[in-house]
Length: 277
Ligand code: KIV
Image 1: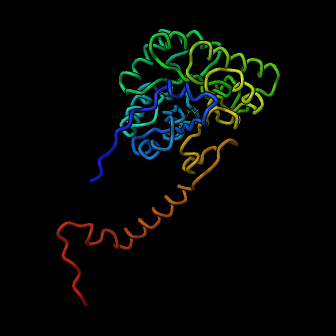
Image 2: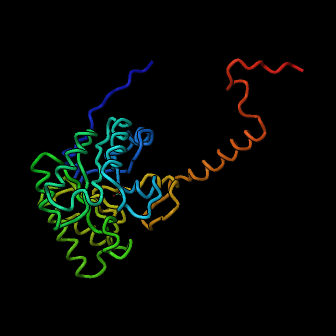
Image 3: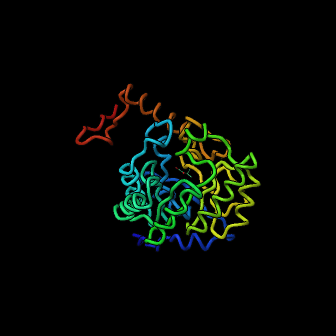
């Protein structure tokens, strides 16, 4: 029997040191079995609040709760042993004040063992990021298209096209970097701006609908596997069609059950073998 090698987990410091180095590979994970499959391929697993839409069928991420995030983050931690696991703070769990953010981020860290939290927002979140980081909670920032602000933004649309938006997003990137975030997700932001920000700030940028020049890339795993069809943004590349594979497998199972060809003797306890003709 081969002995399983327990490797040390990648830390937020390791991620931070990857700035301008080999690209950082990030995928979302919400469950233990998926985390187990992704673990050896990625640097970071993000327990994203996108799970509200992908797993729970919600229309936005706004209804996701802290308890949901903690439950899924615990599962991802149990399923992985190498990747750096970062957990989204859901809407309403951190925007009120730095103290509220600390209280909830501390719960995530203590109850799951994850390496840090992600929160959405730029300049307006700088004080909170500084508060968390100075108290031992690594923070991954998230700027550009911020899905928790979907109603305020008037829908999911690319950010940074207008000059004033570009100026604000650039200022957001500098503000979260200066506040001590170990990295920043840049989502749904015009390519030249994501590229320029990557060249300007000292922390890694993780693009999703950003730029190939970003220091890393993140996508939702169900999107790349063809498992989530409700909405496919332009920035998703599909690497497999698991929906098709599932459909075919379930069709065969249903046909077997209806034909009484499943279960067979090999799936039953004490079933007499069919007699030879
Ligand atoms: O919630 C999420 O999964 C995310 C990533 C897509 C960046 O925030």
